Amino acid sequence: MKIKTILIFIAMLFIFTGCAQTKTPDVFDTRDIMNFLLEKNAEYVSSDKNSADVSKEKRTDTAENGQSPYAVIVTCSDSRVPPEHIFQAGIGELFVVRTAGNIIGHFELGSIEYGVEHLGATLIVVLGHTQCGAVEAALSGEAHGHIKAIVDEIISCLPKNCTKEQAERLNVQNSIDRIRASEIIKELESLDKVEIKGAIYNIATGEVEFLD
Image (tube, rainbow, N blue to C red; front, side):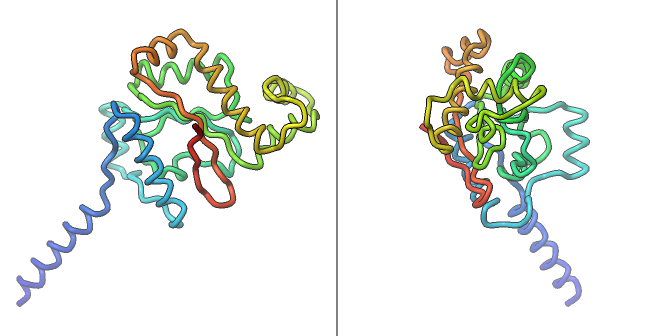
């Protein structure tokens, strides 16, 4: 009886472990990656925990064998926008570049180039968000110090009298245009080796909307 109980326990343990594992997407199929990110975002919206692999074993594996992120996420430094949680991602899955207003300068562009050219990520997501302070500052035209450089970059892509929602989306598109100015990215995109997508994260609902 005791042996039977032990065997049942072991079988249940294997079932639970199998369910807990997350299958990462095919890094060469950007549509697969986008669907995977949306699936994991849906998990995030309906859960209060991150189910991703942040185990000691994963740390050891990536330390010894390196990283192979399936996507580059370019997003805002806003503390309410945590990419690894939003997409329920573990160690080594996302190559994240963060800057206030998710704007793109030389350092950010170099980081993105590294993520796709050297690490093999095939999808770049520029993830803007609702209630972005940098966008709101651009709409009001008020900034000082080095923050002014961030605001001026956002202002440069905004028409007069645009709404906050329009500004958030135009700012995402502006960052995409900056990324496409890279000769490395331009070549990889022309060869269908990388795809760039824009998205907006709703900080209230937790949902990510990919833009057309």
